[in-house]
Length: 245
Image (tube, rainbow, N blue to C red):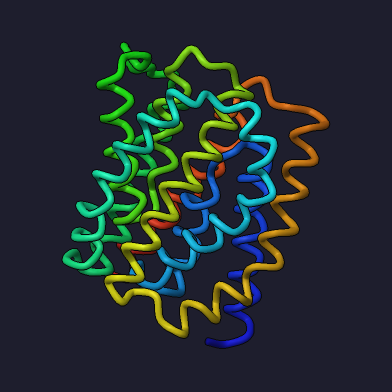
């Protein structure tokens, strides 16, 4: 890969990791669209998930104290069930089609959140399992579990701090499960590991910076910070995919 492309990828993951450190979500949704300009989804998705899991480690200690554990357990169980479904989609759907589907899905869920469309009965157990299943499918298929879980969280009665902490822990667990499935599907090769190593340092720095600013000035609402950025990137990704097609 040309050096200039690597530098662009480093900037993409830096900004995505800052969003993650500050809001608790957004890394995968932002980074996968950016990486898809240069890589296939079968490459970008394991890279993004690998970086997200590693970069989330510094956030784990604080998140464990603040998360809503009963909600976390139900979402996680649903995600474990959905992971094999997502892996099948990743292996079967052609790359260019998958890129467009990733962007459209992110845009739809972002629109729901920006328009403050809230889902009823999110505190019920079936809703937690259902959203977990959708997020697990979306994470392993297209690295888009984040907007699905955020849609659930912002419709819940949890505070912004508890939402952020629960999402951090959920993503660490669900993305680790997805990475295991990707490894067993032979989608994690030497090239993917090399790119993870190259992009790791800027990601770790940025997530720390984001967490610092969160602790200094937490947002009143998570959606007002990250969703406009993610939506814009998704629109650009759709435009690029259609143009290249």
